[in-house]
Image (cartoon, rainbow, N blue to C red):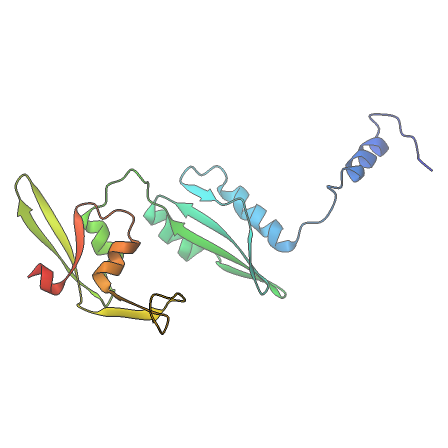
Length: 183
């Protein structure tokens, strides 16, 4: 038996809202995400990803990114990055995102690989009207399991400098090389 409510009354509004199937409670981790999102919503230097990703085993995550490296460092120190909700964990990944139109510099290479045991130094060589830089890496071969048929034992073997060349977006004026090539 259907009930009739006059349009514009509280009962009519509640009935319309209930019929839209949008009534429900948000999970606590969704509420926490909304809280974080709204804190940074108007900050032009911070982007909070609008999607919560389920990683499995009761772990959910979302990203906060910024183009300001100092802000990223401060947010990593300041914000809780793992928040437990019973058997559910919400993880916040805070990352630096560089502008795609910025040119890669020697300082970027130094900052990115400083502390890496394979990285040795940056060597700059003058060439006519410019300078060419080389990121010098150990003469080591990386061997790791790679599930394909390129190797009988499913391993991948690659020189560190070649692996670095494969994984960087744009080398800019810096070329990865081994110690022997730099000498």
